[in-house]
Image (tube, rainbow, N blue to C red):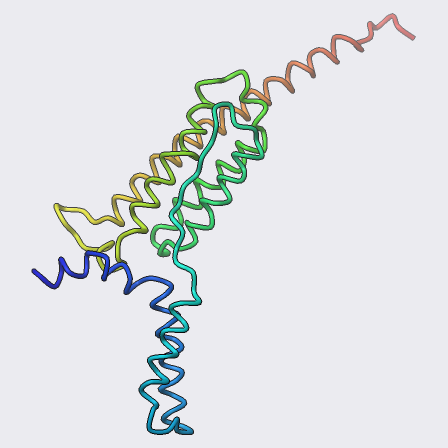
Length: 206
């Protein structure tokens, strides 16, 4: 339908934007003031002005982009994860759970980032998740009007597709985190064997 195509475009995205919501809030406030105390014969202009001020003052949604250089240090990856977390806060409750699990796994990996130095393939995969795969999924989804996100087309919806992508990334990040912990546990066991060998005493020792 023509209306659907119209709402799917830039106008539809603006309707759900922070600018429109802020302008609408101030406009509604001006209407309430007109109904309670009266704003005079130019009240319509006041309402329009209130909406314009709200829309102009509120900054637009910045596009989600994360740039990581090759062999990025932990601080740079951590900053990328923080930027993604701010964008993920705009997701609906139904999509937040897999996003939160993925972000927690990434936090745990970054906390032991140096331990991935001996696993370049896993390290590169984490850099790709933070610098490309996850931001791209979120950016393309958040660019859609809210109404379109839940529309079922071809047996699925953008929301379901995003959840599937987040689940896939969370599973992979979880495997990498578990591998990091497994290496740490192996190192602890090795150190324990070393200590027992180093300080064991024979029955003849006093």
